[in-house]
Image (cartoon, rainbow, N blue to C red; front, side, top):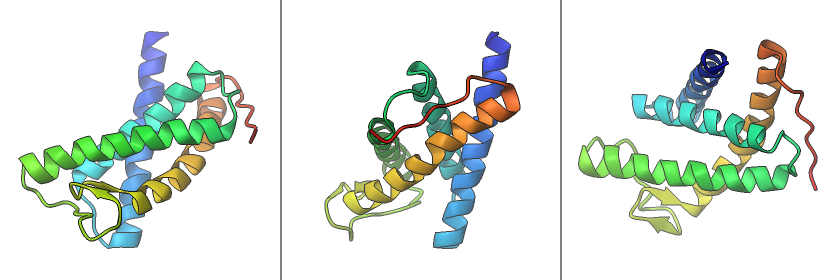
Amino acid sequence: MALKRLVEYGFLWLVGGSLYYAFEIAFRGFSHWSMFMLGGICMAFFAFQGRAMHWSEPMWKQVIRCTIFVTACEFITGIIVNEWLHLGVWDYSDQPFHLFGQICLPFAVIFSGLCAAGIPLCGYLLHWIFREEKPRYRVL
């Protein structure tokens, strides 16, 4: 059972990393390996939190939880890759409501939309590929 979970989360990590990396290429024209890692971690979290609630919690609560997680991970990743390692992967200093240039409100809103798409994607991938419990999403 533990090996199956490891394979499932590894698969979701690869899917999430690939999708986020491709998303950045499409909209920014470039990306960085750290964004692949971060996208994968976030996708795995989407599945983890959904499973914890048996996919029955209202979607808006899941989106808020995941948006907070994604934004916190973006901040931590930013501190590591931009501040400590000086890689200059991104800088939100010119955006409104930013925190040390690592996160900002406009991108947190964008991340909420990605979460709203990623949560059901995780649930259905687990169901279709790994025969896991079928998710039952509801808005309220």
